Image (cartoon, rainbow over the protein chains, first blue to last red):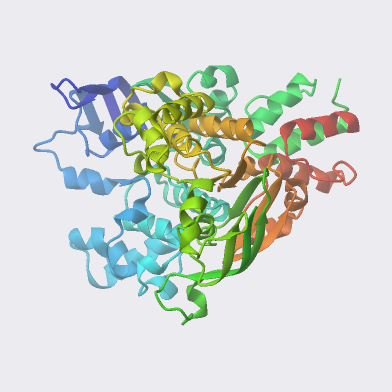
Length: 287
Length: 278
């Protein structure tokens, strides 16, 4: 077990008339190497939940364990937890503050005492992991880069801590399709090559269909559904209650089924869908 | 009609362009005809938002002119008129709402136009009805969902009775339900008001009257969605992608060349074509 939440409750403005309960009795486990998508309406508790994963928030009740060690406000090695589990906030490029790409990406490891050649190696690795050229960019001012590049620099500046898990809140929001494809592709290979655990909060089911293997649906501070991506996205009517429509490909598959095409459940990508359709065409499909 | 005539723009104060790379808009020629639903696509930094802000004189061209129904945005005597005619809604719902209740927020625009009190009331009723937020009129805006806030922002613009509604990535920070709310509001408003919608969601363009594509500060293509999305190679060159429906059809076409003479954009079209093929 990597990250474990047991009966976690959390409230904002606790003990005031404005108290809002953001998490209610949440229990879940995330193992090393998983790729988890967290979805649900605005305000359902997604962001509050992920901030418990790296000890930015502490439960009002219940417990959080990282590698079986209980997270506590005092006495736990919070710095260690936060290096082990990196969190990339929404629009992370708004938090860029250094004057060169190198310094921005080096900020975390420098604070952890990394310097000299090993710092350079780390920064280079982090930039290349998000598909940016070290030679070309390391001396550049991050504010002169395009939106998609700035987003990737911001992700690299978390990656440079060499986290074992990367949590990303809406990593593709506001990006053009090309920037989106690039980031999702890089995250995928990061997981394949380094076994990095991925936890993504997203409103785009089409994105998650490409990258997530497990989906957690949050609903009013509780876990509504939790299961393998194909299983969750094939329950169109169930997830609609949580304000979610299945990915486009799953919707097309459903339409085809209604027309008598015998297309299997749990279609995720355009490639999978077209393969299934091809097979049905060859066997004569529409009734 | 909004007309862009040879519009170039750069952000420095200098009247002459120092470096070519600073040019955000380059010689833009564009007509947005009255009554159409036009969708603008383009990669990050292609100049979409800058173009949107030229529609009502929030930004003024460094070269060329923008005409709104024949009035130039760079003639300050027309500006008041033009801003009433062309309403803008931006990306972040939290940055656009100013009043402490929904109805006061909607009243802000017409109040500033000097509209009489009872007329303002009528307009608030109308605008909130159109966006389906009448039940929330006494509510505090910060208690609303993202989609609801954007609908209030749109109501605030509608209360000024504009002829053009410019939505600058108004759906990009919303959850799927919020996006649906705005897209169905667009189809409801369509025809009664000109809509210029800027987005990164390709799916939001498939139903438009016209799709415009920008790249590096220029209009690189415009036309009916079906004509635009049938140019797959260019679409990817411009940093965009095909709707997943069309992408699926494209993959299938490589296997069955006679299947889709034209790539479908909507799921129903794809399904219909498959059913008649088999």
